[in-house]
Length: 299
Length: 318
Image (tube, rainbow over all chains, first blue to last red):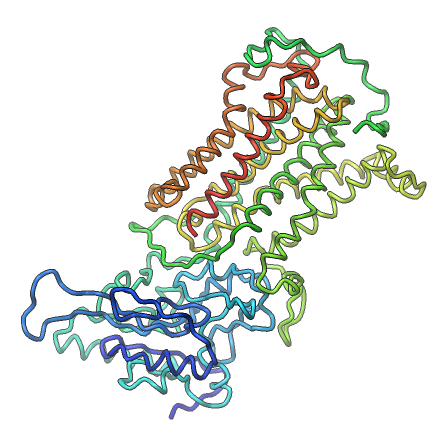
């Protein structure tokens, strides 16, 4: 039983090497959080959950990894299974862009969306690089894994970790989970499972993930951005605003040019074919002395 | 922009911003653009440009009115729209402002621009004697001097921001296409200005005293169209390293891009054939006597292009 103390950082270590795809985590999550769930998705695999969203805060991915060539006994690896969840990033993209302040970091160092503050603008959905957040159409707010915030406040571990029969999902203080995860990778490497690697255990991915993983393939195979692509939305602020500023300067200069051209004598008749045959405007009367005199009734 | 990774990966989900946001982006561009053009007429034009300036302030206000409505209706919980400005987090209540979040900045910019657009609108109503209250007339006289110029310039800066920040808002995300380019802010701004010039050119037909400003509007629209075309090219080029050109320009979005490019034809074509030439009076042709094609169809074409461009950008990744 993990002792849960406010002020200490907690998270998940999900070891995909022992995930059997039972989906007990999904069920436990839905049970505890009273999530209605979606209609099942029936594709060509065993995954009928589809994706993480407002109703699925845990999602067991079944990644088809059947090799092209027949493998020998004991070497077959048909599926990569991974119980996906919000990563509770240290540098959270969702938290960065949220305009309402609804997304906060809790006393357990997790990322939490306050349902009574969120107004459903969905900016966080556009920002989350892991496609974790979804809009609950009935409640009108976005939702994702809370890392069972209410259970943590009551001193209980998250429902998914408690339900996981293989300890693929381990919950605990990060300063204990990380060394354990590194030891597990070392053990796997010693057993010849050299493809095992950790994702998000250090600060190379969004400053570190409170929900980090042991993967059996590259992050891309699990649809996780690698460290090089783990970038925050705000990176585009400077370029975006500078582009707009440059455009604004050029546009204003263009407008000034258009206004000045009129003051210059026309050395040439406009050759615009559409205007050439139309009679010119009548002579312009002198400009009014007061530039802003009234024009009631003109429109 | 940070250097792009060797292989750009996008796994983000779509935010499902659809019609309300599309029309907000469209109207914000027209509102901000019209205010900017009106101010340029008033500050840099001639006395005869005053009717066109007033027309611009009317358009800026009218186009702005639906904007907050659309933004609010797009929210999952519309009655909490004010949470954008006031943080209701227990123990952390206070004003919300994140300079690094364009949505947060945009909310405040919209409020500030709304104030300027309203002041200029009321001022114009008073100067047009559509409001005859003495109190209002006295208040407007305060805007005759330097204060009026300050208001107009500040309002124009806010208008430029409103017309362009929507593109930056899209870029400040982790979405394919949107976050792969820095050109969207400028592109939306140029497009908004182009649409505003076309709209004013169309409306000049119904305010004959503004006809003398048609020339500068025509020339401005040509220059904005060139700017917009250049930014479309830059936009496409910036997507190449990320490998998302097909996402943005593939079928069926290419059809919207064709509409957007068609909207540039009057401006680019006018520049190629007529360059920047206008008559000494400032107008190439009497708007009243111009053909219906020039007066109606061309502005409509340009405005459809402005709308199609935004639709292509917003919908192609969703």
